[in-house]
Image (cartoon, rainbow, N blue to C red; front, top):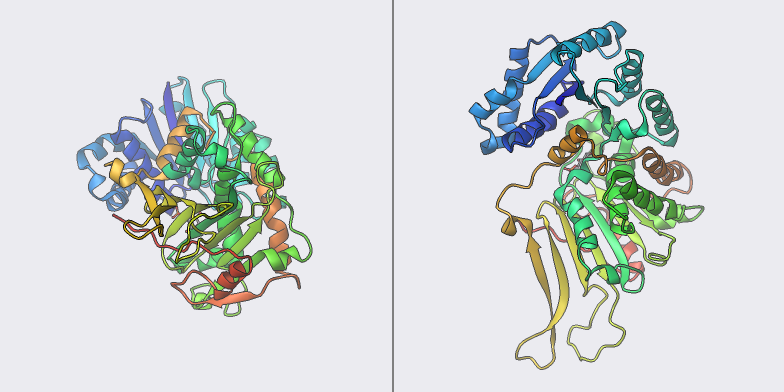
Length: 484
Ligand code: BG6
């Protein structure tokens, strides 16, 4: 069966930087379903050749030595361009005819990828419905929706309602590219394909969990978008909560979309809502020095570029184990990691010059860029009585696996083409995630807000975050990954 991958908003950055390079890599690896054609729709006037040339240049730039001109020529034959405006009904009618002719009246799976301005997602889905382009008499029809899915719970609900008028939930693929990262999927494997971690993975052995997404970059030219979004909408509602769900969820009975998502949703439902004084005690916010000078950022902006949330999961596995979620721009280095901090041993036999501290036993899951896992534990320092020395077992993907780690979009686009929604967010998941974030955003605009602390770029966020953790007799695991 043929496959048609239709990109709405095709002239945007995402198409050239992510979607086309990912589809090309899948082609090179022989993984694209046979007869996959890619159709781009945007307002600009291009013919097929002009669009292909443009994409070839960006693919070469983003793929470096993975780009191969001969393979590109082969791949590019299946890329087509159709000029059209997503807000004009006649353009959908024309697109429909174009696609039917392309598919030669035969059955074909179609994936509609909405890579437009988020404000157009609803209108695009509605137009697909109006023109009968979602009905499945001649093959599966799926829609992939980029983030952000709404800007709060109310807008997410409205968007879900609009999209549900046209597509059934099983046809809707809400993308969060963190779920396409190999190391995030590897966390599922680590937890559910090994028997040695699971017995420890609970309140009896774990003191707390730290989930950090630190970025070295600033907001750069994205100030206009970022200032109305801030770190909670941009990173927490989606990526950090996804990492938390995968860390905390129970094992699904099978690796199937709805079973996986049922378990993730249970985690969100178990998060204890913050109320009253919690907002000031359990959340922190910061802004890097210089943010207000970025393009399109007001000089008195109160937008947070850094945040910490301390969340509690009230269930049998996790009660009493705080989950610290932290993310910021302009931090020391790029590092996404999950730290499982184990409890201290109940009784210490050995005298030690360096007394044991809470930080001794930890499992560090490096999501990026030094993808891997380290287990930190005590050993005996040789020839030094019974002195202890902290050491680590270190697994690195780059050492074990010679290829480059594939970009997250490769896995996700392939899954959308073959119809596996396990790594996409379901409607209830997105809404529940907004339900966690919305009250914090509201509290930050009220007298309950914690102070917005200005931090120096290239540090681990505001110094207040370190003091706050110390008060809880814990410490951040701040370490820049060693890349080799
Ligand atoms: C995006 C955010 O969703 O994720 C960006 O909008 C952020 O602000 C990016 O930089 C981080 O993604 P990654 O894959 O580089 O960690």
